[in-house]
Length: 326
Image (cartoon, rainbow, N blue to C red; front, side, top):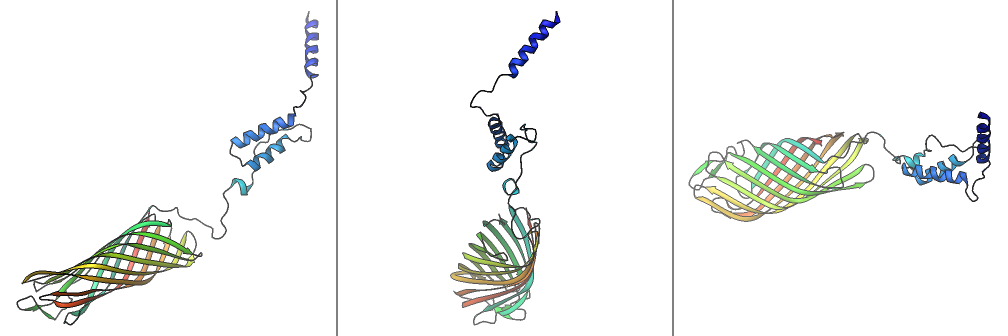
């Protein structure tokens, strides 16, 4: 009974094996297209996918096309291009950089046509915030505070409006500088940050033994250029020669308080800055040591006690700063 069934099965298999492929259909072309679609769906570059699919559809030594185990890889097509030049770890761009700058130095004060011409030791402290510091454009905010002890004009006499008094005084100065920043590169080693914003400055001379206080409020545009030249290092650590040059012009309100009351006047202020230092950066941390000179002056004011006088300041600072990027 089993022989007729076996004979029928053999006839069916022979008929299936003798069926010829449909005219116009190339099995290798179909296989190549399937491989091409699969590789493109996996994100392979078109050129790589076409080459790999063609290789997969080509007959092997036994005349059978086989699916490759993995698509071919060309570094210039599948990998990010390598940068020519420096290599090494580059810290990720920071969104915010916070810095603290401390300084010791001297402040000189001179009022034209008076005996108020002296200098005294001083100290300063500053806070600097930079938004997008590693980008080509960003913004920043600088806050500064500086002052002397009470030894300015020690040994001199001034009038409090009624009688002579000892002139020993303290000097204080506070600054606020919100600004925009741009960065320009000049080759691989030289770059410069340009800052432009509005500068607010408050200065005060408070005479300790006389009831005399003189104050200046100033507001005006300020421009700062910070060039730097890389002396050594690479992307992950570098040593720069850093400079700073600035200029300010401002409108100023002057007030003088004495035993006779308070008088005020309106004048102008100019200021400049020039400095040079060494800056070392490793990863997100930056340290800087430098010297800065800041001359400034107020145009003439006219009050009853102080008279018709202009004033000049000269600040010299040895500064140490530390910045951290986040």
